[in-house]
Amino acid sequence: MSTFFRESWIVFNRQLRMNLRNPAWVIIGMLQPVLYLLLFGPLLEPVIAQLGGNKYTWFVPGMLVQLGIFGAFFAGFSLIGEWREGVIEAERVTPAHRSALLFGRLYRDLLQLLVQALILVVLGLVLGMDASFGGIVLGVVLTLMLGGACAAASNALALTTKSEDVMAPVINLVMMPVLLLSGILLPMTFGKEWLQRLSDFMPIKHVVDAVRAAFFGDYDSSMLWGVGWTVALFALAVWWGTSVFKKENA
Image 1: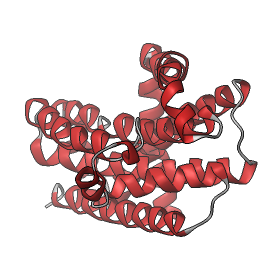
Image 2: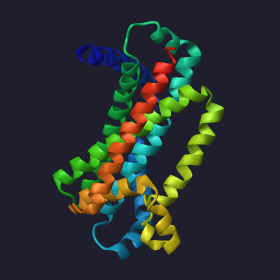
Image 3: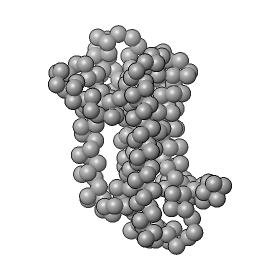
């Protein structure tokens, strides 16, 4: 186990240095949650007023999940570049665990997501968000696990397709129903009854409900469904990502 952590830490350090060499992406990553909250949040104020409660307590959890999904799902594009440059081939000839090659990259993605989440939460608190410390911590943890699942799946998809031209439309095809049926931007209760029923089959919708419930302090059945789906998606994506990295060694 100590060898695994040492190997994954080496991969993480390399990935982090690559990100820091291009500060534009770091700055854009930090500004993204701020722009969402400041520019898009006020547009939803009339909608949130109909639901009651604090508008930022409702809006920030949805933005957290959106960051976890959209940011992490594009992590695999850099992996395709590394594969094309021969980096993956060079890593394959080392005795490092193939899972360490995946987790080292996940550490970088989760660190970036954590920084974005903290910025978003702090700004939300400054703007008047009303949430308990425990609820915020639980919501951020769920977001990180979902982001880890999306990043692992993105890396697996990248090594499977090995083409940005194939990967981009696949991600867009997945993201569109997720964005529309998960209630990230607008509550599904505003939609038709058949649309609400359809959204019940969207796992991300239950995660969004769980993060919002944590921020509002409502630890009901929606929390159990959200936590369960988050753990299941994370385990499934890590299994897929690890399997693909192992196949690359075959």
